[in-house]
Amino acid sequence: MALIHPEFTIGIEEEYLLVDRDSLALADAPDALMQDCKSELEDQVSPEFLNCQIEIGTRVCRNVAEARDDLKRLRATVSSCSARHNLVPIAASCHPFADWRNQTHTDRERYNMLAGDLAGVVRRMLICGMHVHVGIDPPDRRVDLMNQLSYFLPHLLALSCSSPFWQGQDTGLDSYRLTVFDNLPRTGLPPRMESYGEFQRSVSALVDLGVIEDSSKIWWDLRPSHQFPTLESRICDVQPRLEHALTLAAFTQALTRMLWRLAVRNQRWRIYDRFLVAENRWRAQRYGIREGLIDFGLGEIVPMGDLVEELIELLEEDARFFESTAEIETAREILRSGGSAGRQRQAYQDALHAEDDHDHALRAVVRHLIEEFHADL
Image (cartoon, helix red, strand yellow):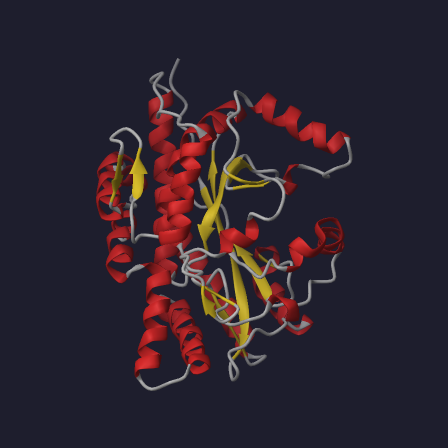
């Protein structure tokens, strides 16, 4: 019997923050802005939990070339619609100087329920993420690949870090977003599961108790999607630059296919204890691309530059298949630039060296993020 090759279609979801063009502070999205966006993008745009956020989602795409066209259109449309209201979007996981206590949540049933259920924890959710869906069937294969792909989540996180600042301070972390998000229940690395049936039984146990309505309230770093026949990666900070978002999507798609190729040959990537992978997750969260991750096979901390080169070589066949070699090799550019966290810190330091004060330097970071959002449009 001929082997059925999954399509490995991808979809990208991004959350943006809206800032006032003059003050560079966060601003609520007026109803008219959402109406403008909806009229042009229909169901590809939606409000997010906080009024200062907006979310977009690409169509189902075969590869990153298709995703580039759609994501560029979505980003450009949100930008042009925002400009009519003296607002501008940025794609960073934390605003450099905003205070979460000054934000209000969107008045929708789903978000009102979240605010009630999660109390003070959810009010701090002034964070934005990037999600990548990869189409995989059958469902048992989805869960098998989830177990294996978890090993690479810290690598993706390290390349994506875009949230070094929180409430006007450099946190010392490259992804402060995760310290906020991890306060929610049902987050973090996914547990190891033997089948899709086990996943369904676990979800049903909570649904039957009335604890959650469905699996959309499970916010693991990687999960079987509630809505689509996909494996959904949720580990990444959102990317200021469109091309870097496409690099992370290309890695996610290629890694999934690489692991599938192993699986159909009755092979698999070694599954390490969640405790060990969590240590790499912390290293990625703390240092981004600066300090490297643990290679548990070698028993060494390996620099991110070496790990990226290993990944590029490992995924060569899959990158060719999806015609995404250029996008995957853009990871080298991310490394050279210091990643978004490094570039934001550099923008801050450059402003200080120009005899600016702390507050003005933070606004310089926002201006830098605005420039990066529009650089590839």
